[in-house]
Image (tube, rainbow, N blue to C red):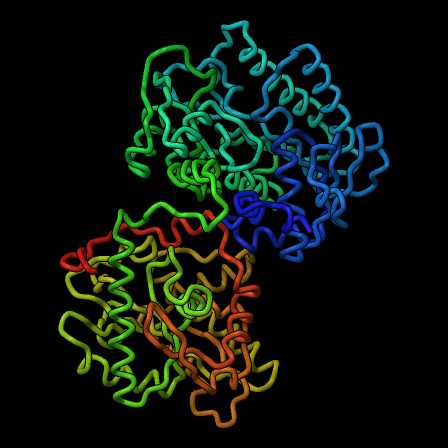
Length: 612
């Protein structure tokens, strides 16, 4: 399997963790023709990974020489390689992706030019014959020799004034795109063009002019960067994201889009500053004037406006690349996140856990560590190293009992938060908050009328129907009523991939007052709370609602596991429970998600900053 061959960095971008599952699921059982160079090889790995690990059954046909591919790729049942002369043997394909000369460099221009033109003509004929929706990748060099402070949109071009190989690459990119547009004109296939910024990808084989600086930072060596203009960078996962959005119809079928990362436009000086902020004195980067890279900055407002916003920030992309140059085979040491506060936040969370444990023992309330906290207890004997929150779970009787006595039992400085204690709060679960602190994610940043202190989440696993049909209806109603509340509260429109379902839900979001929708949601979640002999439970309050239901007896018995040196309760059958939630729960999350599992927009931990 391809997973067994990829290292941690390759597996991260091959897993495409920043691409929504519902978008990737639209590629299930499809056949995709891929052609190109380095970026095409990476895309093949990612598509095969999706087939083998995520069971999406995507058939990949690579056109070209695959001698540089990993053997595990070429041996996969989901992969087939053909040369350009044999492409006519392919009788069926849903999509065609041509990465062309995107981020490649010409060494022998006449030969490269003739070869690329020949490939375009053959691929375009296949696209017409098969009726395959096509995506062409180009890059920011197509805009020419841009002005130093200019950021180029899709219909703006700079002149090509030079005669060096960089200008030849620009002309080649323009020729490839023009040829595709000519072939597509009047033909029965769609063509979307994606122009990338400078693509960064740890262990991808893609190269850029800042690679030397990234390697030098990893090794603590001095390096000189030329700083005289802006560039646009994008991590490889965001390129894949744009490709997937194009293939599944989220972008204009015949449109042209620039693809860039979050805050991806920056000068070499900005890159140096980001690296210094993360790595301190290890980033021994010197800035100088001189001849710069032949590239330009590009604007990505159009693709964002059409619904495909990037997911990877420039600092995260740079950190991944620097880490890929670091030596050592042990666990990767992630840069300290949350502006250096993560250690203190985790110590606060542990204090929460011990207070909850004290209260629950005193009042004979059964609870378990839940979610990522339970996973951390089993896999790490404590917090997941990059996690910044804590979760516990209870059954309904204990959940309601805890809600009644919590505020009286909590120590000074801690508050119990629910829809009853905080009239402006509409979370589907209860929380504990630390007073005189602030901690808000993207979801919570606009809710300044509620307590947004450091939080501890308390979830209830409720009973559900014994019959399969009853469980299905209960689950659907839970998701529906939750959508009414969360979208009304956050002033969002529902878009779940189904126009009819989204339209119906948006109608009721407007029709029902928020407080009424909140009442409906809570009644729906707890509908079966008095049911006797319930055989199934579900997580109606958390993200795991989409996992469906699980056997009620999994949470019958409690055992204790070491968590940061303290014995805390977990389900005796934790293996079954965690497998239900995560599948192979001992496998670490994709690397890029560990660098920022929560996007923290407000963070102030006050007097707790120096916890030891």
